[in-house]
Length: 334
Ligand code: CUA
Image (tube, rainbow, N blue to C red; front, side):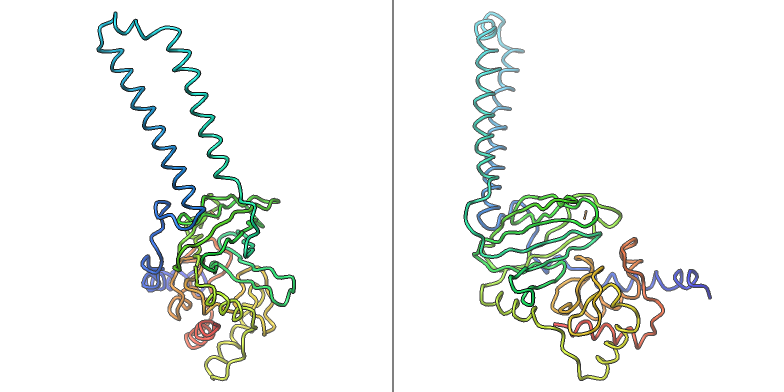
């Protein structure tokens, strides 16, 4: 049977099975700009309400004047119309109001002159996020994907870039959007008030799977964050369990290492996400699926059915036992 025929037959059932693995919305806080978290988001929320309130007041005044012009006796209206109204209402008031709002908005948008406690570099790719924690000692640097861990109560600076097309980095609960522009590095700061998992997403149309380009911010108490960071620095351990060893062998022989790296093995690919600690992440494929053995099987076998056009091919040539072992091995990488 040709590969195309086989795909026709296999894909619908796998896609249906994978529906059970779809990333559940109750696994993270409600994603909303109105649930402002931390000082940066609160400043933006206050700015929004001030803008909204000012616009509402101006609208009410303009509407009242309009109604007055329509319904008031003309000799009364004549008393306020004319050059004075145009000068004060049409020139002086807008200049003062808009200048005041402009100065306030620029002030809110200016980065504070304090050293951030932590710097994280995020790169947008079609259609996922590479997350790096740089360190002066390269051996202590961390590379992960689609999940950003940060300590609660500390100012974090995130520098964003892209290696392909325009994307936009947005965690509505924490801060405004910032574009990822080819050839440029943009910087945004955020700070979490309380622990939790917050959803972010790409906010600039970047191709067929723009809608499935999400990520999660995991805000943790500082001690917990440090423990996570220490764990992430370690290479993957060689498993003793026979089925995990089978999975590891399958990973290395099926060609996964051409695109993915698992530190501690010979897999060094840098096209797709680093999988050294994949099992510790909450979601797969940039927020598309729950990260568990079922989700991993669905993704490996039918990544093109689940997220058509993403760079990872569907590995439908793997037999059931190998596929299961591979998923078990990847889930064990914590
Ligand atoms: Cu990346 Cu839209």
